[in-house]
Amino acid sequence: MLMGAAAAAGVAAAAGTMGYAVRGRSSSLLAPSVYHGDRSRAAIALTFDDGPSESTPALLEILARQGVQATFFMCGKNVRRCPSIARAVAGAGHEIGNHTDSHPRLDFHSPEFIYGELALAQESIRQTTGVAPRLFRAPYGVRWVGLRGAQQRLNLMGVMWTVIGRDWRWPAPRISSLILRRAANGAIVCLHDGRTVERAPDIRATLEAVDYAIPILKERGFQFETVSQILCPTS
Image (cartoon, rainbow, N blue to C red):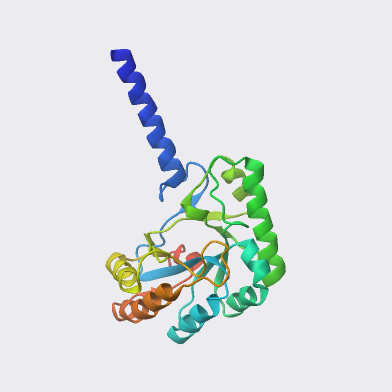
C-alpha cells in the first residue's frame, strides 16, 4: 500500500512538472522563454498573435493614431494569404515575431514537425516583409520536446506573456478591464489580430479594448514598447 502511494505520488509529481514545462508561462525547461520585460521601468509591450488578417489594418490605424509600437506574432500561412498586410505591419515600424506556419498545438509532435512549422513561417515572413524574426510565440502557449533545438537553429527567443486578454472570447469591456487591472512595469500583454488561420476574423472586441485602454495607461505614466525594447533594461 505504501509503495503504491509513493508510486502514485511520483507519477503525480512528474505530471505536474511536465505540465509546467509545457504550459507554464515562466518555464524555460523545453526552450528559452521570457514572459515579462524590465520591471524597473513603466513600460508595457502590446503583442498581437495569429495575424496578419484582413482585420489587421483596422488595428494598425488605432495604433498609429495612438502613437504606439507593438509586436505582431505572425503565422506563415496568414502571411502568404495577406502579404500586403504583413508588409504594412513592418512598414509601420512594428516588430514581427514567428507564430508557426499553421498555428498547431506543438505537443505530441515530432522535433521535425516542430522545426518545419517554425522554419516555414520564418521564411515566409522574411521573403514577404524583409524581416527575419528574432522572437517566437508558441500557439496556445504550448511548448514541447524539440522546440529548444528549433529555436536555436533559427535564432529565436520564446516569448510568453504577463497578461493574456482572452480577446477571442470576451467582450471589449472585460478585456480592457483585465489589461488595466494587470498592467505593471515590464508587462507583456497578449492579444490577437487574427483567429488562428481564419479568413476575415471578427476582432472588434480587441479593437475596442485596445482603443479604450491605451489612453488610460498613458495617463498612468506607462509608455509602450516592442518586446525587444522592453526586454532591455536602460543603463
